[in-house]
Image 1 (tube, rainbow, N blue to C red):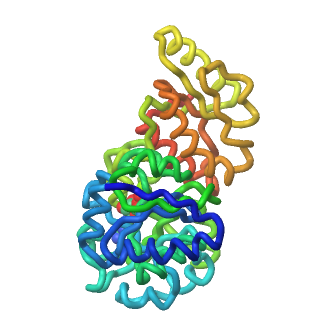
Image 2 (cartoon, rainbow, N blue to C red; image 1 turned 45 degrees about the vertical axis):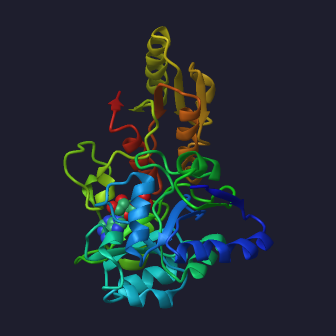
Image 3 (cartoon, rainbow, N blue to C red; image 1 turned 180 degrees about the vertical axis):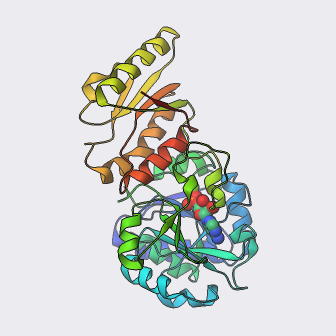
Length: 349
Ligand code: AMP
Ligand code: MG
């Protein structure tokens, strides 16, 4: 299959290309597109064949459900059994935006899309290209991140191309993205709202709207044996090809320890890399030292993380170390992705 790559940053270009991209989706094809979080791999969410194709293109296990993307509130009703008060409040406050809600599905949504579950994950993305595409496609676009399963999610179209060239019909290049980590997922089907995947919308932000919110305990746990409640969170994810270790401790100790490990790796002839912050970037001796930004600027760290992991792949880095980050606020999402990228290799000093 020939994959068409189109840059749609200009509004004129969007007007020209979105109807064509929407038609591809309506006819059962696949189109990758930008959202405010990461690039998504879109197919018609109400067409079981499209969902099957998404799993095949990504090499994703088919028990890992897809998020259904909508472009307006009126389109929520037909796909869910009820819209609980909590969902209305959250949509009011955070949609369009990086929040996915789990609700009870209607028959309209095929099991191929929900990985066999009776619930459906729904989100309204905050990106004009995404919203235009969803409208042009008929209202419902299933879209996981547009990467080969297990790799870091793409935050640039060139990484979508790297993974998906020849596997899908079209890639819409919308330039760089605002957030860079996947949406927060909150389950609204139980007694108490529960966060299944942390993201840009934090527990504190949700609690401001809903009162008490729980968090799936496995999110930051180091034991990878208890399965998380979002089926997809159990898989190794976001991972670079080399071996990544996260090191926790005081700045001084972390720098000293990582440098010692780097020296060993270097003697073994390995290519090395470090993920650090502006505060420490001059202190490391690795082949590639990458700062994700200032320690206090969590939004920037979130935006940079996947790009850095992908660059390490481009540079064929074999041994990587990363500083740990605070787990308050957005830091929880950053550490959750980093721990998964590291396959839970963590060292405490
Ligand atoms: P991705 O599409 O790569 O952003 O991953 C979607 C995430 O949403 C995966 O971790 C899924 O397991 C999770 N998810 C989607 N639908 C549901 C659902 N109905 N219940 C629980 N988790 C879900
Ligand atoms: Mg993904």
